[in-house]
Amino acid sequence: MCGERGEIESHGARLLFIGSGSPRQAADFAGEHCPGVPVYSDPATATYRALGTARGVATTLGPSSLRAGLRAMRQGFRQGATKGNPWVQGAVLVVGPGDRVGYRFLSSHSGDHPPTADVLAAVREATASATG
Image 1 (cartoon, helix red, strand yellow):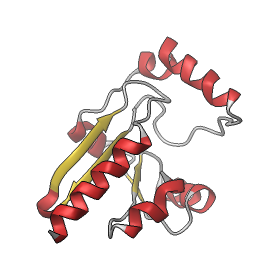
Image 2 (image 1 turned 30 degrees about the horizontal axis):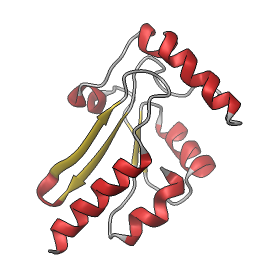
Image 3 (image 1 turned 90 degrees about the horizontal axis):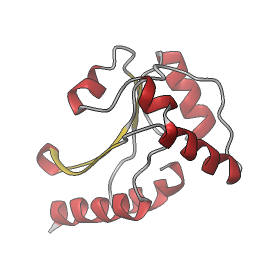
Image 4 (image 1 turned 180 degrees about the vertical axis):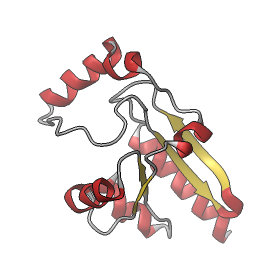
């Protein structure tokens, strides 16, 4: 989503990340991947549990994850060192005024990401309702 930061911010929204690594790992992620974007640390994965994200060896190393990894490699991406809890999958939320969740995507396996267009549409909708 870092590549979409300008689009997100142009609507008055803010991008942030919550990772399962240590505070130092969160700072390293921010500096390496998305400078200037807040990255919060949740090594106990309480946020992930509250959201009901997928977890376990099968969600990280199962066939869907392996396919996603191969697809990413073909596109030129490479897996770096694992930081944080490798067995917990991520999520994408768009939260609007009044803490209303306007969009929620829970990854079912490693490499499972929401369509960027869907996330941006949710950002536009949430910010339009805030100003309209």
